[in-house]
Image (tube, rainbow over all chains, first blue to last red):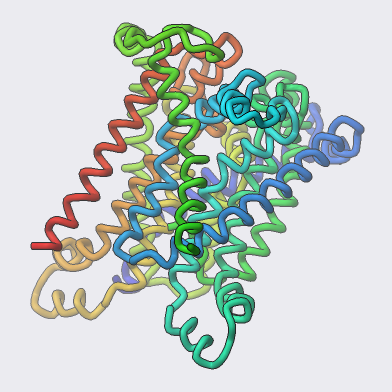
Length: 272
Length: 257
């Protein structure tokens, strides 16, 4: 437990260098070279070609919308949950982790059954004489799939941050004459910023880079940037182009990392 | 009135999260092979499941990798946390920064980067490469759940044990370890869950002919999912649900006593 034990970090340090740092270096190497090994920027400039740029724009749009929807759904939920007894803490976390025990592909696929033209939801809507929902194979269905899959990653950090707020701080604000709205804006919201940043990161990055949700719910016609990169690696086997496009994605990931380093210095917004 | 609205809101979100799971469970009893229509109740997929060697093989691989990777990650991660307590602030935050990379990075980038690493090292793709990859993305979950416990730890108790003549290792296991245990357990559970549910990283680092449940389902999507898969997923889900309910109920009883 003293500085004597520093050598204990060696296994992890070794592991991180071999399996985190070097692999990222490999992407940089492949992204910046062509098949002959010569330096080139072509793989990165390739993002500006019509097809790739369109995929990136669609990915950005859909992931921004999904992140916003997740945030709007999760914040009130986390506020409600944070006021439930502390004893139930683990149970609440479990409710949001439990669905992951059913395979993510199957769960997403189940939305097909629910959303289809003759699907479950439309049967229920028809029963109440409501107009049918026609969102399967549209961008809206992809957004739904993203929100569904990534909502827990927004709820957990928000819940964690909000449940750490001392109730006395809120009571003090009320005692000093602040109304609910003012307390929320001046006390609760600022104190939950680490959770907000962490939640946004945990939703935005996977949504931006997903490649399965789009093919499962978008009917396979709508290509996201993740789909394009996946195809470069598994079908066309053009690793250089795939790496170059991944580097473009890494720019967004880096922006996110910097943001979370600034706003969440002590890792307070973590999920657990 | 407001508390009723709150309850309805929470219930709707939970319905949203669990509706697909309910759907899959219903489908596992569906006589018709297509997802689109209900063909009557049957148990045949549950029986067929235990005769389907491919699915059982994939299940075995999935469980083996989840168990091995989360155990190894738990050991490496916990040891790293202990090491970090003795570190200077700078090197500690550097190590935590590295820890955050797999958490914040996109799965597709992590998957691709590992795939390129294995290719250039000439490692044969198979169970080994999947295992190495899963350990890599599991370690951060362990560190992030053990670290907060580590911070709460009172170092004096450990020093007291040493002063009273205990060996460092003995003092660690008798005094420090019990305090860390909840963090270690939740880290392990989180790592196990993430490994079990992973598709993207496995997709890029698996070899031909080696499948986990995720990658097996992915190849089946084009041909149509075999209903045995729904049956298996429902079984896994119900088993875990039962276990968690049992675990969650037992400490409550103790507290009451």
